[in-house]
Image (cartoon, rainbow over all chains, first blue to last red; front, side):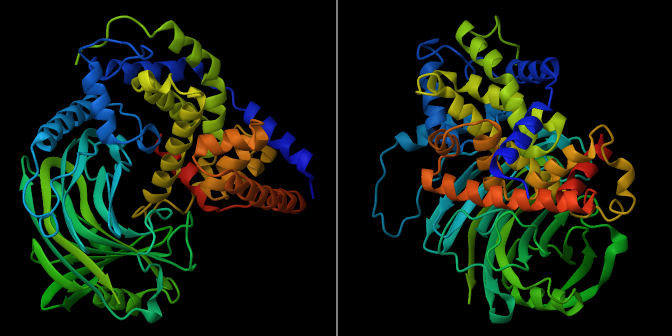
Length: 337
Length: 189
């Protein structure tokens, strides 16, 4: 067994073994800089152009502290959208708020447009998940619309092109795990054997500015360890309420058709690192009141024993491949018993 | 949008040149991939440039840009793992896409590092490979010094065990999740 000093040495040598391509690094930086609007990017310490300064400070204030920002913004479109969103929110926020506070939904929150940006809404958090953004070109923002107890509303806007058939983003509301934990007190993970119901309702409207290739879906995650952090999930169950565009799932992976809650669902099984069960509603809907436990049970009945040990996360949102549009969730809740 | 006139300020340029190599190496150790390491360093420096008016006034701008590098590396690794969803046909025959340029010992260290949870990996890399103090690591990761201590010691124990195991086996273990992510990425290029 190597000792501590040897380990330090191994790691130092490993770091030094990487000879960065400094020309390529600079080129990537410069490409990002060229794509950044002049009003946003500046490297003047403290001073800078008087015209740009107030907007920059308000924008960064609304988008969160530097540490909370997600990926840096490489596409000018994202920044332009961020500025537009932030400015419109500033206008909104500037208006006096009236009326009782206890029963009136909160005003729309700021738009979050950078990769990984998020907003905590009680037990849930809203995540601007841009995990496939580099497969194409475009942008996406999320914002909260309302939050009362366990009921929330939110919206997302996107515009994606290129990379046909590949998911660019999953603007989503997360309850529980997402490669780690953010909000305490979610009641997750819970052993599937102890799970009685996962009741949910979801009402949304979908506005298609151009024809979209997308799914509006629940995404349930399972682990075979009780306290997962970075571990791969063991299984994933997707419940697609609405699908438009190309194939949501490779057709060859279809394993059957099932009836749940009076509706017909096509069931597909895919996955490599973990099992993925996709239930695609035969007739799309924009309003659902379901017990997701019904889907879990069905997937378990054909799944590998053990891969459903713990339910770690319930997520819901839009898996967008291409197109431009808006998903507005007017009412969403999940209750796990 | 037209490109900006002029270059970066002298102050930022000095910062860029001084830290680019360290950040690329940090990115490399956290992603396990040479090209990805350079990418996340460039993106972190771009984030610093965009936010420079605030970043520069901090005591230590380097803490900010290190944190950006760490965050970007973590999301890159997660995305690469996640995007394998639905890649049914890719797993068999992955070996042919394995990197060939690195020696077995390098792959051992990289594999062992990539098996650590991201938080532990960041702690041990900053403490051991870059010789940062516990306070500097806490600042870069926005966590407490106590957490840095415990994460680093867990990571060190895990790494020592893994490296000892690889050396006694005399071969790089095949089929870890992270290797697969790298290989899928190489295949796409």
